[in-house]
Length: 238
Ligand SMILES: Nc1ncnc2c1ncn2[C@@H]1O[C@H](COP(=O)(O)OP(=O)(O)O)[C@@H](O)[C@H]1O
Ligand SMILES: [Mg+2]
Image (cartoon, rainbow, N blue to C red):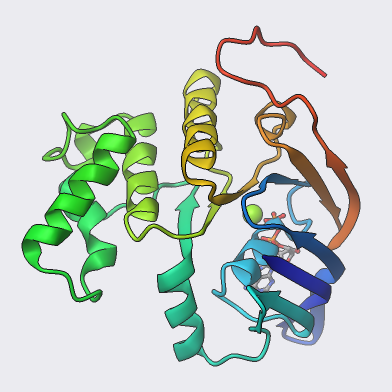
């Protein structure tokens, strides 16, 4: 469970300061699927990097599964990230000239598994995202949607309780974006993982159960979406 209170993040830019987060408080329960929306510059990525223990807030508290993480050092944060969190980014962030299988095996390198175990787990994750036929292809031999599937397999391979995706459909055409959202929905349903997705596309957001909106580093709305869009529904605008 994610509990934050009055999170702020201030970036010092020479003489001036940028308040990327300005008192954000919310709770996300284990197993929720949530969208975070807001215009460019509203603090979405900053919030994700704090939730994902990539960075700490300037002030405020963040309790993750009962543990205060807001003042942890980099070593402890890295340990929590490795154990609990899988990340997916807009630009996939895959290693070039490296096969899908090796990209997905990478997070297991330091986990003490044998080569065979690493390979088996990576194969299973690639199978889950529908790419078992593409394991030896490098990123430049895959479509954008397939590259994002590899990135999702990489995020899943450690079986994290939380998946954080920052604009995962932002570099994809809308049909492929919807397929990626359906993949997240399937993972959420099967594994009960907490899934948090940043998007500025309200159609993407409406695939989740709850939509939190940010503006100028503050939460300006937080609403349940009782009828998330599901596979096969005709596309309608809000
Ligand atoms: N590392 C940084 N250094 C200075 N300013 C930053 C940094 N990261 C983000 N910002 C600023 O903080 C604000 C929020 O950024 P960000 O969290 O990336 O917003 P979003 O993801 O919603 O576009 C923006 O004004 C941005 O320019
Ligand atoms: Mg961003």
